[in-house]
Length: 182
Ligand SMILES: Nc1ncnc2c1ncn2[C@@H]1O[C@H](COP(=O)(O)OP(=O)(O)OP(=O)(O)O)[C@@H](O)[C@H]1O
Ligand SMILES: O=c1ccn([C@@H]2O[C@H](COP(=O)(O)O)[C@@H](O)[C@H]2O)c(=O)[nH]1
Ligand SMILES: [Mg+2]
Image (cartoon, rainbow, N blue to C red; front, side, top):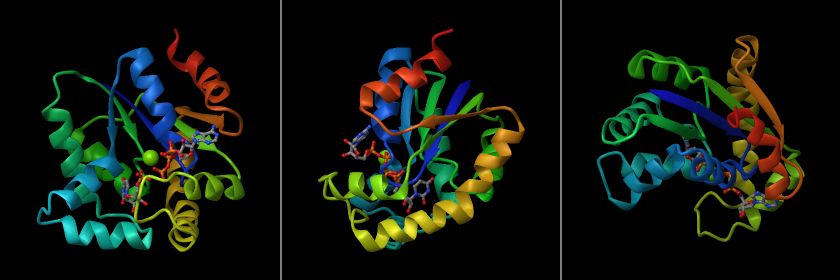
């Protein structure tokens, strides 16, 4: 199995770029946020807890997210994955590595200022419960407190690619392309 992870603040453009990377380089795109939203819309045992956590901009317990990821990976016919929006905390990272049993080959960190991220979230228009100022401010705090340590970890391991996420979608994709076009 081959995998790469994509992290960055709210609305920075992870999903947008992941879609293009997956299409261009033949990966299966797994968005952990989408897996969680599916649990809400399917009213599963975790649905209510996930809705509350997402609405507050907090991080869902690793046991739930890793379980969802494991099921998605095991039910896929491919073995090349692109994991969008995960790991969001050191706890997530350790749980993933223990349960799935491997580390991602590369980790992309999309970097952008908070003002632009907020603007992108508020213009998204997809009816997401977390696309509002209060939740986004909370998500930015969670990102600093819990996700930055993950970024530091992968940077120390030499796996991190920091991508400047300011510019057009095409410009950003051209910054990503050389990582995979080997
Ligand atoms: N380079 C860009 N410039 C301007 N807007 C962009 C850019 N890339 C993506 N967007 C837009 O910003 C919004 C957020 O993008 P996207 O959903 O890809 O972000 P995300 O990082 O996955 O966010 P989240 O973590 O909240 O899921 C979307 O409306 C998208 O069309
Ligand atoms: O690993 C994860 C991924 C997501 N969440 C929760 O979902 C929302 C939205 O996630 P997106 O990746 O931006 O779609 C996020 O704010 C978290 O509340 C999570 O807990 N763990
Ligand atoms: Mg997304």
